[in-house]
Amino acid sequence: MVGLAMCWLGVTPREFMQITPIEFHHAMVKKREFIQNENEFNLSRTKIIAETIRMETLFLVNVQLPRNKKIRKAQRLFLFDWERPDPTKVKRQTREEMKAVMKAIARGNKKR
Image (cartoon, rainbow, N blue to C red; front, top):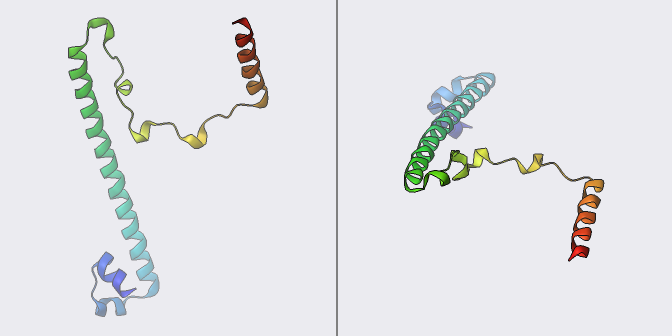
């Protein structure tokens, strides 16, 4: 615990011995909140920079494309990890939907 207090809180061993356990706990909680806020700020700044780079790339690509082939949405170039759909939230097909798809495939194969 002394190591944590020295590293995270910047206190000396003598100062650590003078604080109560509840003071130590509160100081560690506040330090963790500070680090989380700093990480969120850095992530938002990174997103802004990444979006700017993607827009510049879109401009450079569109300059070289014919008018009818120009890309309108920057996300069509590439997606960032934070824009990808969460695989845990993807809707799963029901049994009825699966059966309907299989029947449609079977009907399609018989026509050939």
